[in-house]
Length: 280
Image 1 (cartoon, rainbow, N blue to C red):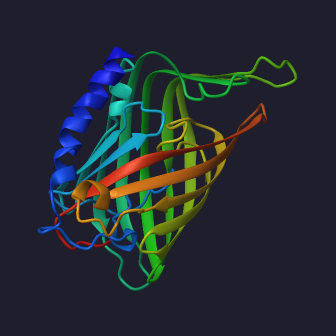
Image 2: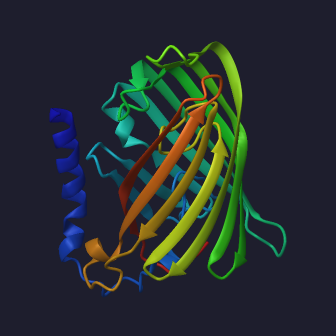
């Protein structure tokens, strides 16, 4: 708890100066102009330009995720939510090319984690435990098609390496799922995005295998996500509120071999800071 309080204090010390900063040097900031890196629980082929960054804060006040544009083709992903859980965690995305007519934008993305102690990915549910331990690595190819002005489709595929993975269910009518050693499992994800208005976007996302944020990096997970992202104060003259985004997510998931289904409604807060007019 002490570490969490210290972390939140550190993040607020960074964000609070933007509360009093006016919009004089910033652009009109509706959600239709945001660059989505991981909308809902998905992956796009876009990267953040140099100087732009996104901070994601879970609503349960656990440490969040920082994404930073190194340059127009490279984005660094720093999952600070793991740094206070005895976990080494870092991610990286590189853009390969942008969309040209029927050819989609494309990028490669990789994440590495080392968990020094077992971590339960679904600690919000007392009926199931999903444990990971040791090395965890995934590599994926991301593709994004902008079909209409406000409609896009994102597809991501790859694999996840997991050193130790264990699904435990107290109910004996279900079968536990255990992976140990050099296990490679496939990942597939489809994300459909509709930026309906300047203040709201909607997402539908079926997936198999690892995803980015909700019970993240968990192999052999069949999942459906329905999400909405809001920009409630996008006309504010204060940068802190202008860049604030709120995401509400319904997650339903089942794991191979045991067929136990769980679902939850959760969400995140986002700050998407930028000082130029870049769009995906």
